[in-house]
Image (tube, rainbow, N blue to C red):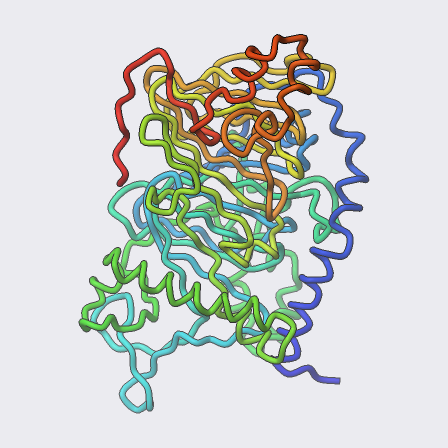
Length: 480
């Protein structure tokens, strides 16, 4: 029995949908026994994998904090002209671009190689990203990313990325190893299609390409290539998982309207126009998700969304800071990773109102500045009370209350949340718990006079989620 390309894609999408929605809750319930938190620690990377053109730094996935959340986390630094080789993972991932820019590719089963170029004898020709010579190639569509972008990578999807910017590319990644689509174990497993991984001090690679262990003769016979060529794709590669590209990387890249490749690759306006076109396609995806156009719409899904643009802030206080959120409502591809994110920028001595997450753990990674952070559990005990600073990672367990106050230099972080539509419940301010309680109930609950209860209920009455420093003359933050 043979399956057409369209059939393979339809089967793949069905498995993703069934996997993500069918038993997501069951998987997390099975791992609740690992979430007995008595004390939280701010985490630093503890492992390091060096490659030819970059480094990957791992947070300890056996720590109580990451085991509680059911995730792993790592920071990746890719040098200029560094290529992260094709690989796939047993867990869905969410990536935040801390700095730099580049181009990424996904290889999705059943999707067409829609970026194509033929030589002069062909019937179609498009400008390509590379040197001026002619070449023929076709591959699946490319995705440009930049600082502040969130990148969603479903489990099992082959992925690669290239730093074509003028500076180092730095990212932070969270992989949801507790997702029900991961049928292996709690460990994050990265399968290399090329390259290798070597831990610090290791003389031999700890992880090599999946092709290395196949019989050379069987591989050559299956692919219809010579034994010598099969040996070449199996040979030991000590460059690691990130390799240096010394010549131009030849990629098929469509013309811009102005006919200049540099403009199509570098223009912020064109990037935003393309994002808008993809948003319109995704609106169609939402309408026809169960219709006949499912395969085509999935192949054109947008996997990348910028979370750092002040214009798109969900909460903005010119005297305190801003909050940007990305859920599956904004980026439908998050249906397939079951994760979401929030980006918070706090001004000097501003506070993030006390709140908790109704339906998700939150992993806070600090990108700039420092803050005092307090986390309180169900017993009313502080499980964390200390400074959190750039480069540190902190788990905020589901329903644990948290309060953050920025230091004199401000405080910026990205929060990864273990639900595609994480919901936060604010304690004070507009739309908060206290605003929704009857004034008399507040008085009785805290043994307050009526006037005192009113002051508590309407504290920060005109602010939402982010509060300015009440002891200082506020200085408005720039909008853009």
